[in-house]
Amino acid sequence: MLTENMRHAVSIAVAAFLLGATAFGQMSQPILGDQPTQVSDHVWALMGFPNVAIIVGGRATLVVDTGMGPRNGATVARVAAGLSKNRLLYLTTTHFHPEHAAGEPGFPPETILIRDAVQQQEMEAHGAEMIDMFSSRSAQNRELLAGVKLRPPDILFNNEVKVDLGGGVTARLLWFGGAHTKGDELTFVEPDGTLVSGDVVQNKVVPNIFGDGGTPASWIAVLNKISALDVKHVLPDHSAPGDGSLVAKEREFIVDLRTRALALKAQGVSAEDAGKQLSAEFRTKYPDWPSMNVGGFVKSIYAE
Ligand SMILES: [Zn+2]
Ligand SMILES: [Zn+2]
Image (tube, rainbow, N blue to C red; front, side):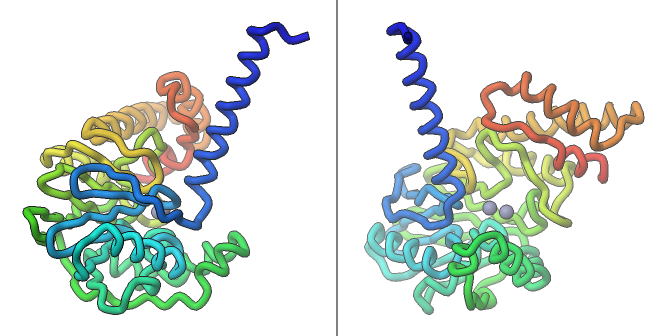
């Protein structure tokens, strides 16, 4: 028989499980909803897979990321039109992966597409291949990505372009170097101090370098450059928003993991064993992170 206390504990465990399942469901299911959440004075987000930013100025709106495929892109464009008093729409993407960039055909054709040059090179080299890879993962992905043709951007930049959205709102589009991919783009919104960080700054998510993206050292160099900005809010692409302290936390985690992995490498421990050992060690050290498999990132550190 369950005592009152036990019953209470069971119902909390069930609630926590359901909450976890729901949060995970929202993070991984690829159909975006149409209810925006406000992140700061001029920044809204559609929270989903991935989180999409909508930055509203007095004369123009900038969307960062598209959702997977044109159907999601059209949802984002509709929500952006509802939030803004203007028809001028800019679009940019945090990196070239399909849930971030392959919804572009769902936007109105007059949308001004901006992207950093390194990201565009990656898109041309690996964009179609990534769409094929994502399409093979599920029937739903295949349907969302069917027939997607990616167009070249209207504006390419090397290190930085400033987009004046009017009403005192400026978006600085920045390429600081490779991290999750080579072409990771950051958007810093002034005066809000809001950083749309892509995969570069996340909230309690183990970093991941995809394919021939950046290196752990280049990722740290990117974070050093971000620390020079006055970041007050962070909107990551695959985790919950947070305050500016997420930038230093991301850096601490990568430096910590890199220091430990390089020490094990110097002792002759294999990358695979180091990954297992450090996953266990970091699970204890960072107990509030929802999952802690550092094997992939340890491999990237060993390969530097
Ligand atoms: Zn990615
Ligand atoms: Zn992603």
